[in-house]
Image (cartoon, rainbow, N blue to C red; front, side, top):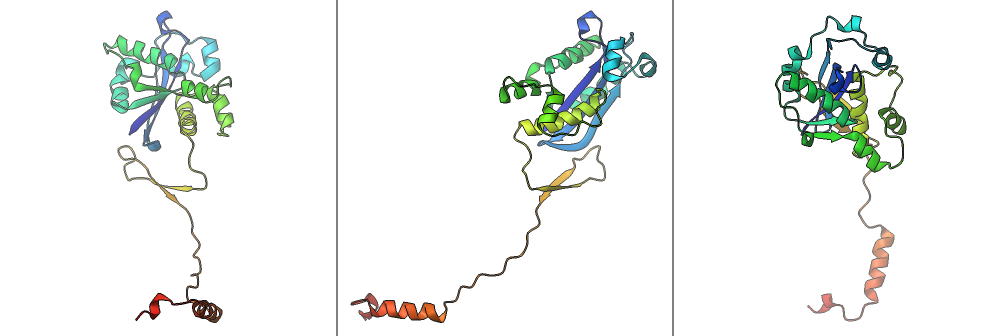
Length: 230
């Protein structure tokens, strides 16, 4: 079962007002295990990047001006996500930008039924509690030390961990050892759960002398046992 954990960064809040994507980050999961395949792309929004947006993600016009525009990379993006389910936090925000960008290249867009919204999952599981990505990482003790600014790929990595926890978490007490395939771009990482087991001495099964004596005494107390019918 393939799923794509996805996050974006933008120039603002509303594509209908001219805001554009500036970054897309995706991580592939196979049966809820990261395969090692990622899609990450910075985008030239072909417009200015407001200071308040730069304060969130740190992506300036100077940095983005030589990056490809969406029309140049959307085929690669669609090929990567294929027909997999998309896992997004606050999906309504990201999807309105993705579908707005897809509309500019004549694509019909991605339907809502393909999207799992972890914000909705979190609000159902923890009603009344903070449900931002940061808040959920703190709840589940997921390391946020490298997240000084928002970033689509980093946030996708964090969201993948949060998603696993929302689903019930990894089984405690297991050590996971990953064996990467020779071609990580096309084959998933094999995860094998292992637990060290110490050998246990065999239990004694033969009766002791005391056991035999007790059994004989019990038999002598029986009247007319069936084994005497012969």
